[in-house]
Length: 160
Image 1 (cartoon, rainbow, N blue to C red):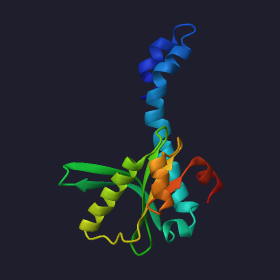
Image 2 (cartoon, rainbow, N blue to C red):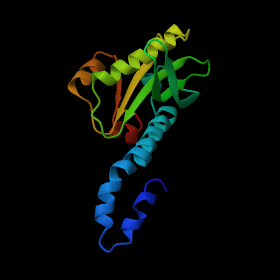
Image 3 (cartoon, one colour):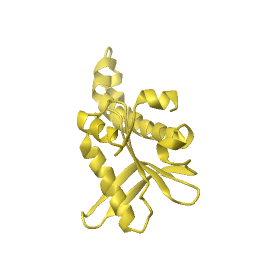
Image 4 (cartoon, rainbow, N blue to C red):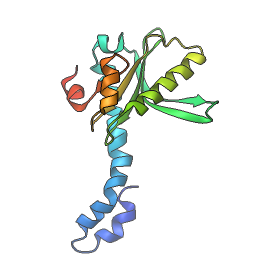
């Protein structure tokens, strides 16, 4: 509804569909496809990621928000995996149409530090970067050093 309602009157004009789609595409991607991709990433984390990838099997995977009082901000996390004992296995960020870079990893590191300062055991928490658009060289280098796990569409759909 929120995608098409603003465009309904335009659709009544003959041959307006292409123009309407051009106007609605960004909103559709942001409000429908993006959240669906985030859900897909949580589903993969919960059901198809290898135990070695996360350092264990998650009992629960959800999205979450971490308060950052010093930075006067909140950090949204697209995938948070927790094991049966409540230990945080992973924190994940999902980007549908953005090539992820080291800045995204820095955000996840900050979230992990905030959780640690709140008393959570995050010594083995893995940082997951999900992207349908790819990963920049700086993030690939960090991943090769074991600082992040990169998850692209191929990995999601092959289940590894």
